[in-house]
Image (cartoon, rainbow, N blue to C red; front, top):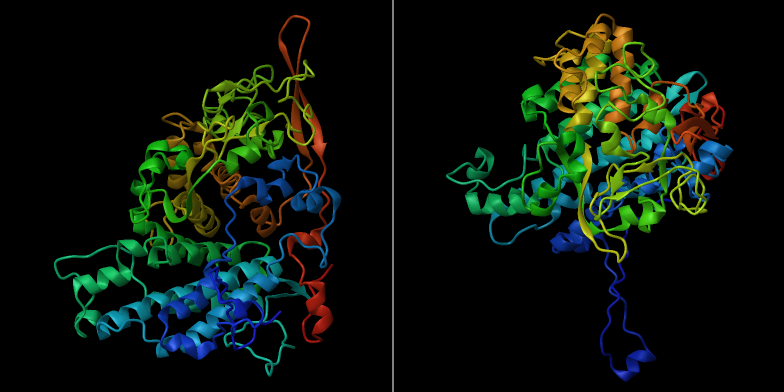
Length: 596
C-alpha cells in the first residue's frame, strides 16, 4: 500500500525511432526525488498526484444518495445499491473505502513538503521564487488536511468503547519504515486536520486574483516582489486552487462533523465551536445578505454557466468549484429513456414527501392543504426543480414525461424499460442541464460545485441551534439559525411573507432541529451529503425506499398509489465504516472497528 521514498516516473512517448531502438530500447526516463530541486514541473507533479484523487464525485449516477432514503438506482450493478439493499458491506467489500487512495495521496504530500524548500521554483527573481513556494506549500498542507478528513470520516469507529481515528502519517515512508502503527484517537486526528489547515493559511491568499497599484502583501514587497510577480503566483490564473476562503469552509465542515452525535464522545469539537467556524466562513460572503438568491438552482443557470471563464471569480453560491466541462454524460445517465437516457438515479417518494407545501407546512400537517389526489400542486418550488414528476417537462424540446403505468409501451413508466426506466416513478433533474438533446447527443456546459455556501449556511444553522437554540446569534455571527432557515426558504418561494410553520418551529430547539435537518436534506439532495448526515446524526438508516405508482381510473382521474420499492439492510455498527480487512490482517497494532 505504501509508496517508496524514491518515486519512479516512466515517460512514454510516441515518436519515430531508430531501427535498433526496436531491439534495444533506450533507458527509461526514471527520476528520483532529488530531481524536483531543479525541476519545478516535476515537483508540482508530485503534489498533483494528491490533487487528482480528491474524492469529489459530480455525476449523480455515482453518488451515495442511492444508499439512503433519498434515491434508488435502477442499475443492478451499482455498488451502493448492493451495500444498502442487499447488505453487501463488509471490511472486504467496502464501496466507501478511502484507505489506500487517501494514504497514497498523503504519502505524496509528505514527500513534497519534506523537499519543497529545496526546490528552485523560479529563476527570474527571489521574490517570485518565494511566492511560488508559498503557494504550493500552502496547497500541500491544505490537501493533506483534506485527505485526512475524508480518510477519518470513512474509517473512524468505536474500539473498546472509545472513538478511534486512523494512524496519522506526517512523514514519508520507505522500505525501512515501521508500518505496524496503532490508530490515533479521533480527537488527535481532528486536531491534526485543523493544524494542517492553520499551517496552510500561513501561505495562501484569502482569494486568488490579480492585484494592481501596489497591493502586493508586505512580506513580498520587502524582498522585491512586484504586482506582476504576485499575479503570476497568486493571480487570476490560479483560481480554482485552494485558498483561505475554501479552508474556512472546510474547517466548518470538519467542525460540524466532529461535534455531531456519532462523534461527540471524543470531545474534539463543540457545537459552539462549529458555529464559530461556520460564521467565520460566512463572513467571506457578507453573511445572510450575501446569500445568492439563485443559489438553490445554480446547476441550471445557463447564462452563468455558458459565460463562465476559467480565470473568472467563482459565482456567489460557489465557494469551491468543481470541474467545468462540456458533456452530456450526466443527462445520458439520468434522463428518462424516452429521451434516450438510462434513468439511473430515481428519487424516492420519501424524498418527494419531505418537500413541504408552498405555504411552508409539511404535507402531513393539517394546515398544509395537501391533496393526495393532486400531490404535486402548490408544493415547494424546489420539488420540480430537483425532481421530474409525472407530467413535468425536460430536455431540449421540453418533452412531457409520463410515468403512468397504463400503457406498457410507455418507456418512462415504472420498470417499463428494463435497466433504464424508473423504479420509483420519478426521474432526476438536479445537477442536470434541462436543455440537453440526446438524439443526436449534444454536449452542454456543466458547472460542478465542491462546496456551496448554502451548505455552510446550513452547517451554521445546525450548530447554532444545537448550541444556543433557534434565535441566538452564535460564534460571532449577527444572525441566528432561524434567520438562515427563513432566508433559505424565502429565496425558494416557501412559507410566504410570514412562514407560520417556521415561527412554530422557532419555539423549540427540537422542532427547529427537525426543520433544519429537513431543509438540509432538500437543499443538498444528490450532492453526497445524506449518506454521511444520517450517520453523524445516528438517525434511522433503514427507512424503506418508496415510490409512486400512477394509474388512470374509470372516470379518467389519476390514481396515486404509494409502493415499497427497496428495503435497506444496515446494522447500528454501520454508523462507522470498517478498516480494510487486508490491513488489519497485516498489522497487529491496527485494531478493527466494533462490529466489523
